[in-house]
Image (tube, rainbow, N blue to C red; front, side, top):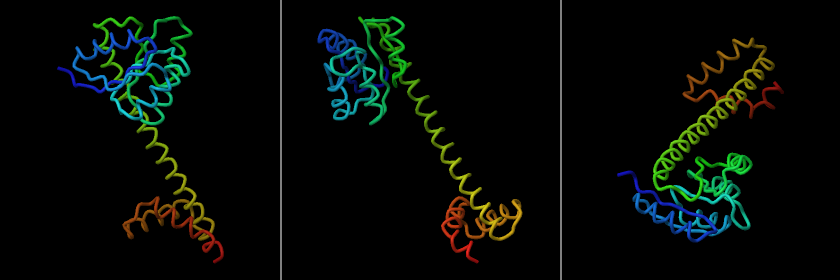
Length: 196
């Protein structure tokens, strides 16, 4: 049996909520929150901390994609959009939000388990891509700091680029300090270095 998930459902039509709840429970999942509007979905996602959410695309006050944006901003989870519409404009609206699958209502019980599996897999890929992007941004910032420190050493000590880099590398090893930390210290000491 697949892992049991805590589920949030948001649909302004009570019958759809009940039908989907029944289908999800048959698959072994637990519906922990049921909303009838986008705003309520955001609040319930905050309170109940579900593993996955099903949001109707059109709800009063706040659409499913708008609710998905807010939920993802606070605590990203796999989100599946539900819609009675499959026209191009509606699908495009869903694709501009952090959703990982799209199901047309009424939901066919045979489509539910595969949709959940696909949404979770896409969500994991998205998380990994975001982690990699964040790591690259950190490395880029660190590289910039090292380059600035190297430039400062070249300017204040009359070193070549290679000598400045070697100085940073050797000092980093001698002091058992990451090169980026050494670069930060050098840049903080810049006013003193430039006065000498």
